[in-house]
Image 1: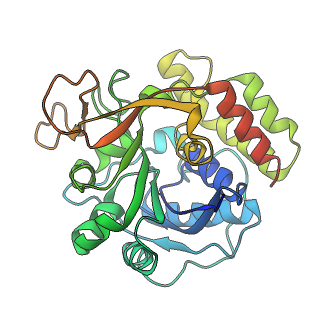
Image 2 (image 1 turned 60 degrees about the horizontal axis):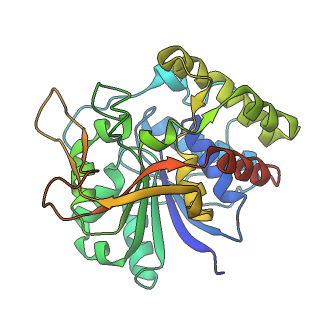
Length: 313
Protein backbone atom coordinates (compact mmCIF):
# COMPACT_ATOMS: atom_id res chain seq x y z
CA UNK A 1 0.00 0.00 0.00
CA UNK A 2 1.24 3.49 -0.82
CA UNK A 3 2.02 5.47 2.34
CA UNK A 4 -0.58 8.06 3.29
CA UNK A 5 0.71 11.62 2.78
CA UNK A 6 0.11 13.74 5.86
CA UNK A 7 0.78 17.12 7.41
CA UNK A 8 1.05 17.03 11.21
CA UNK A 9 -0.24 20.24 12.79
CA UNK A 10 0.90 20.32 16.39
CA UNK A 11 1.66 22.12 19.67
CA UNK A 12 4.13 19.75 21.40
CA UNK A 13 3.34 18.66 24.28
CA UNK A 14 4.60 15.26 25.37
CA UNK A 15 1.73 13.35 23.80
CA UNK A 16 2.18 15.33 20.57
CA UNK A 17 5.82 14.24 20.63
CA UNK A 18 4.84 10.57 20.86
CA UNK A 19 2.38 11.02 17.97
CA UNK A 20 5.14 12.52 15.83
CA UNK A 21 7.56 9.72 16.77
CA UNK A 22 4.97 7.09 15.83
CA UNK A 23 4.47 8.72 12.43
CA UNK A 24 8.20 8.99 11.69
CA UNK A 25 8.66 5.35 12.73
CA UNK A 26 6.04 4.15 10.21
CA UNK A 27 7.26 5.05 6.71
CA UNK A 28 5.44 2.11 5.11
CA UNK A 29 2.15 3.62 6.30
CA UNK A 30 2.80 7.36 6.57
CA UNK A 31 4.75 9.94 4.59
CA UNK A 32 5.19 13.09 6.66
CA UNK A 33 5.22 15.96 4.16
CA UNK A 34 5.88 18.50 6.89
CA UNK A 35 5.09 19.54 10.44
CA UNK A 36 3.25 22.79 11.14
CA UNK A 37 3.28 24.31 14.60
CA UNK A 38 0.65 26.33 16.42
CA UNK A 39 0.39 27.99 19.82
CA UNK A 40 -1.44 25.79 22.31
CA UNK A 41 0.08 23.71 25.09
CA UNK A 42 2.83 26.34 25.21
CA UNK A 43 3.46 29.48 23.11
CA UNK A 44 4.52 29.19 19.47
CA UNK A 45 8.23 29.74 20.02
CA UNK A 46 8.29 26.65 22.24
CA UNK A 47 6.00 24.45 20.14
CA UNK A 48 8.09 25.12 17.03
CA UNK A 49 11.25 24.41 19.02
CA UNK A 50 9.81 21.23 20.53
CA UNK A 51 8.76 19.82 17.17
CA UNK A 52 12.35 20.11 15.97
CA UNK A 53 13.67 18.53 19.17
CA UNK A 54 11.41 15.54 18.53
CA UNK A 55 12.48 15.22 14.89
CA UNK A 56 16.13 15.18 15.93
CA UNK A 57 15.43 12.68 18.72
CA UNK A 58 13.91 10.38 16.08
CA UNK A 59 16.84 10.87 13.71
CA UNK A 60 14.85 12.86 11.14
CA UNK A 61 16.51 16.30 10.99
CA UNK A 62 15.44 16.81 7.38
CA UNK A 63 11.70 17.05 8.13
CA UNK A 64 10.37 20.52 7.30
CA UNK A 65 8.98 22.22 10.42
CA UNK A 66 7.03 25.45 9.99
CA UNK A 67 5.92 28.01 12.55
CA UNK A 68 2.30 29.08 12.25
CA UNK A 69 -0.28 31.09 14.17
CA UNK A 70 0.80 32.43 17.55
CA UNK A 71 -2.68 33.15 18.90
CA UNK A 72 -6.29 32.01 18.42
CA UNK A 73 -8.55 33.69 15.89
CA UNK A 74 -10.60 35.74 18.32
CA UNK A 75 -9.47 35.04 21.87
CA UNK A 76 -6.45 35.37 24.11
CA UNK A 77 -4.18 32.33 24.14
CA UNK A 78 -4.73 29.77 26.90
CA UNK A 79 -1.77 27.44 27.53
CA UNK A 80 -1.23 24.28 29.57
CA UNK A 81 2.10 24.52 31.35
CA UNK A 82 0.32 23.12 34.41
CA UNK A 83 0.16 19.81 32.53
CA UNK A 84 3.18 19.83 30.22
CA UNK A 85 5.67 21.92 32.21
CA UNK A 86 7.24 25.24 31.34
CA UNK A 87 8.92 23.92 28.18
CA UNK A 88 6.00 21.78 27.02
CA UNK A 89 8.35 18.79 26.91
CA UNK A 90 9.34 18.58 30.57
CA UNK A 91 10.58 15.18 31.69
CA UNK A 92 13.55 14.15 29.56
CA UNK A 93 16.65 16.31 29.25
CA UNK A 94 16.80 16.78 25.49
CA UNK A 95 19.24 19.08 23.66
CA UNK A 96 18.12 22.19 21.84
CA UNK A 97 17.58 21.54 18.12
CA UNK A 98 20.21 22.38 15.54
CA UNK A 99 17.88 22.03 12.55
CA UNK A 100 16.35 25.35 11.49
CA UNK A 101 12.71 26.21 11.02
CA UNK A 102 11.62 25.99 7.40
CA UNK A 103 11.17 29.31 5.61
CA UNK A 104 7.61 30.54 5.29
CA UNK A 105 4.43 30.39 7.34
CA UNK A 106 2.73 27.13 8.30
CA UNK A 107 -0.59 28.28 6.83
CA UNK A 108 0.98 28.94 3.44
CA UNK A 109 2.70 25.55 3.55
CA UNK A 110 -0.65 23.84 4.19
CA UNK A 111 -2.31 25.71 1.32
CA UNK A 112 0.54 25.19 -1.13
CA UNK A 113 0.87 21.48 -0.30
CA UNK A 114 -2.82 20.81 -0.79
CA UNK A 115 -2.78 22.69 -4.11
CA UNK A 116 0.41 20.98 -5.31
CA UNK A 117 -0.87 17.45 -4.70
CA UNK A 118 -3.79 15.75 -6.39
CA UNK A 119 -7.14 16.25 -4.67
CA UNK A 120 -7.85 13.67 -1.99
CA UNK A 121 -4.23 12.65 -1.45
CA UNK A 122 -3.14 14.75 1.57
CA UNK A 123 -4.49 14.13 5.09
CA UNK A 124 -4.28 16.83 7.76
CA UNK A 125 -3.53 15.65 11.29
CA UNK A 126 -4.16 18.41 13.84
CA UNK A 127 -2.98 17.53 17.34
CA UNK A 128 -3.57 20.95 18.91
CA UNK A 129 -5.84 23.98 18.50
CA UNK A 130 -7.21 24.27 14.98
CA UNK A 131 -6.01 27.83 14.31
CA UNK A 132 -3.64 27.00 11.45
CA UNK A 133 -6.17 24.75 9.70
CA UNK A 134 -9.01 27.26 10.01
CA UNK A 135 -6.80 30.12 8.84
CA UNK A 136 -5.79 28.11 5.78
CA UNK A 137 -9.46 27.37 5.01
CA UNK A 138 -10.33 31.06 5.37
CA UNK A 139 -7.42 32.21 3.23
CA UNK A 140 -7.92 29.56 0.51
CA UNK A 141 -11.47 28.14 0.54
CA UNK A 142 -10.65 26.00 -2.49
CA UNK A 143 -8.48 23.67 -0.41
CA UNK A 144 -11.45 22.22 1.53
CA UNK A 145 -12.40 19.98 -1.39
CA UNK A 146 -8.78 18.87 -1.86
CA UNK A 147 -8.32 17.52 1.68
CA UNK A 148 -8.38 13.71 1.80
CA UNK A 149 -9.38 13.77 5.46
CA UNK A 150 -8.82 15.70 8.66
CA UNK A 151 -7.99 13.31 11.51
CA UNK A 152 -7.84 15.35 14.69
CA UNK A 153 -7.51 14.97 18.43
CA UNK A 154 -10.02 17.15 20.16
CA UNK A 155 -13.33 17.39 21.91
CA UNK A 156 -15.18 15.06 24.17
CA UNK A 157 -18.79 14.17 24.77
CA UNK A 158 -19.46 11.51 27.37
CA UNK A 159 -16.17 12.38 29.08
CA UNK A 160 -17.03 16.08 29.28
CA UNK A 161 -14.08 18.45 29.26
CA UNK A 162 -10.55 18.55 30.63
CA UNK A 163 -9.98 22.32 30.76
CA UNK A 164 -13.55 23.34 31.64
CA UNK A 165 -16.45 21.11 32.71
CA UNK A 166 -17.62 20.91 29.09
CA UNK A 167 -14.62 21.67 26.86
CA UNK A 168 -11.54 19.73 25.82
CA UNK A 169 -8.36 21.85 25.71
CA UNK A 170 -7.64 21.90 21.95
CA UNK A 171 -11.17 22.99 21.06
CA UNK A 172 -11.44 25.42 23.97
CA UNK A 173 -8.26 27.29 23.03
CA UNK A 174 -9.74 28.28 19.65
CA UNK A 175 -13.43 27.37 19.39
CA UNK A 176 -13.94 29.76 16.48
CA UNK A 177 -11.28 27.89 14.50
CA UNK A 178 -12.84 24.54 15.39
CA UNK A 179 -16.24 25.81 14.23
CA UNK A 180 -14.74 26.76 10.84
CA UNK A 181 -13.11 23.35 10.45
CA UNK A 182 -16.21 21.35 11.37
CA UNK A 183 -18.29 23.41 8.94
CA UNK A 184 -15.73 23.14 6.11
CA UNK A 185 -17.25 20.10 4.40
CA UNK A 186 -13.93 18.22 4.53
CA UNK A 187 -14.15 14.62 5.78
CA UNK A 188 -13.33 14.63 9.51
CA UNK A 189 -12.38 11.90 11.98
CA UNK A 190 -12.37 12.92 15.64
CA UNK A 191 -10.36 11.32 18.46
CA UNK A 192 -12.16 12.78 21.50
CA UNK A 193 -11.48 12.34 25.20
CA UNK A 194 -14.02 9.50 25.07
CA UNK A 195 -11.34 7.48 23.27
CA UNK A 196 -8.11 8.94 24.59
CA UNK A 197 -9.12 8.46 28.21
CA UNK A 198 -9.15 4.72 27.45
CA UNK A 199 -5.54 4.86 26.18
CA UNK A 200 -3.90 5.00 29.60
CA UNK A 201 -0.15 4.79 30.11
CA UNK A 202 -0.19 2.33 33.00
CA UNK A 203 3.06 1.38 34.72
CA UNK A 204 3.52 -1.86 32.71
CA UNK A 205 2.99 0.04 29.45
CA UNK A 206 5.47 2.74 30.43
CA UNK A 207 7.94 0.08 31.61
CA UNK A 208 7.72 -1.40 28.10
CA UNK A 209 8.78 1.94 26.60
CA UNK A 210 11.70 2.20 29.03
CA UNK A 211 12.72 -1.41 28.38
CA UNK A 212 13.40 -0.53 24.73
CA UNK A 213 16.58 0.96 26.20
CA UNK A 214 16.96 3.41 23.33
CA UNK A 215 17.11 7.21 23.51
CA UNK A 216 13.56 7.33 22.10
CA UNK A 217 12.15 4.68 24.43
CA UNK A 218 13.72 6.25 27.50
CA UNK A 219 12.63 9.78 26.51
CA UNK A 220 9.03 8.64 25.93
CA UNK A 221 8.98 6.93 29.32
CA UNK A 222 10.32 10.09 30.95
CA UNK A 223 7.76 12.24 29.15
CA UNK A 224 4.84 10.11 30.29
CA UNK A 225 6.28 9.87 33.80
CA UNK A 226 6.20 13.66 33.92
CA UNK A 227 2.76 14.50 32.63
CA UNK A 228 0.91 11.56 34.13
CA UNK A 229 1.29 13.02 37.63
CA UNK A 230 -1.33 15.64 36.71
CA UNK A 231 -3.88 13.29 35.17
CA UNK A 232 -3.53 10.55 37.78
CA UNK A 233 -4.19 13.07 40.54
CA UNK A 234 -7.06 14.67 38.59
CA UNK A 235 -8.87 11.52 37.46
CA UNK A 236 -7.70 8.94 39.99
CA UNK A 237 -6.80 6.70 37.05
CA UNK A 238 -4.09 4.07 36.74
CA UNK A 239 -2.21 6.21 34.21
CA UNK A 240 -2.36 9.28 32.02
CA UNK A 241 -4.30 9.38 28.76
CA UNK A 242 -2.05 9.32 25.69
CA UNK A 243 -4.20 11.58 23.56
CA UNK A 244 -2.48 12.57 20.33
CA UNK A 245 -0.89 9.26 19.27
CA UNK A 246 -4.45 8.01 18.71
CA UNK A 247 -4.48 10.13 15.54
CA UNK A 248 -1.33 8.49 14.19
CA UNK A 249 -2.44 5.01 15.24
CA UNK A 250 -5.71 5.48 13.36
CA UNK A 251 -3.79 6.22 10.16
CA UNK A 252 -1.82 2.99 10.60
CA UNK A 253 -4.61 0.70 11.84
CA UNK A 254 -8.12 2.20 11.85
CA UNK A 255 -9.52 -1.12 13.09
CA UNK A 256 -8.21 -0.23 16.54
CA UNK A 257 -11.06 2.31 16.81
CA UNK A 258 -14.85 2.27 16.62
CA UNK A 259 -17.19 5.23 16.28
CA UNK A 260 -20.16 6.76 14.53
CA UNK A 261 -20.65 9.18 11.64
CA UNK A 262 -22.65 11.94 13.32
CA UNK A 263 -23.19 15.68 13.50
CA UNK A 264 -20.71 17.60 15.62
CA UNK A 265 -21.15 21.30 16.38
CA UNK A 266 -18.85 23.62 18.36
CA UNK A 267 -20.18 26.07 20.97
CA UNK A 268 -18.76 29.54 20.31
CA UNK A 269 -21.18 31.85 22.15
CA UNK A 270 -21.72 30.73 25.73
CA UNK A 271 -18.94 31.45 28.23
CA UNK A 272 -20.36 28.67 30.38
CA UNK A 273 -19.90 25.99 27.70
CA UNK A 274 -17.43 27.73 25.36
CA UNK A 275 -15.62 25.19 23.18
CA UNK A 276 -17.98 22.31 23.92
CA UNK A 277 -18.17 19.66 21.19
CA UNK A 278 -21.88 19.00 20.87
CA UNK A 279 -21.83 15.50 19.43
CA UNK A 280 -25.19 14.10 18.32
CA UNK A 281 -24.14 10.55 19.28
CA UNK A 282 -27.72 9.32 19.55
CA UNK A 283 -28.78 11.09 16.32
CA UNK A 284 -31.62 12.94 18.03
CA UNK A 285 -31.46 15.93 15.67
CA UNK A 286 -31.89 16.22 11.93
CA UNK A 287 -28.52 17.97 11.55
CA UNK A 288 -26.44 16.41 8.80
CA UNK A 289 -23.51 14.20 9.88
CA UNK A 290 -20.18 15.97 9.38
CA UNK A 291 -17.66 13.86 11.31
CA UNK A 292 -16.79 10.32 12.32
CA UNK A 293 -16.67 10.61 16.10
CA UNK A 294 -14.74 7.78 17.72
CA UNK A 295 -16.06 6.20 20.88
CA UNK A 296 -13.80 3.27 21.73
CA UNK A 297 -10.27 1.94 21.29
CA UNK A 298 -8.50 -1.41 21.53
CA UNK A 299 -6.04 -0.07 24.11
CA UNK A 300 -3.88 -3.20 24.26
CA UNK A 301 -3.58 -3.22 20.47
CA UNK A 302 -2.79 0.49 20.48
CA UNK A 303 0.06 0.16 22.97
CA UNK A 304 1.41 -2.95 21.24
CA UNK A 305 1.58 -0.99 17.97
CA UNK A 306 3.12 2.03 19.65
CA UNK A 307 5.82 0.04 21.43
CA UNK A 308 6.69 -1.98 18.32
CA UNK A 309 7.05 1.13 16.18
CA UNK A 310 9.00 3.16 18.74
CA UNK A 311 11.46 0.27 18.94
CA UNK A 312 12.46 1.06 15.34
CA UNK A 313 13.81 4.52 16.17
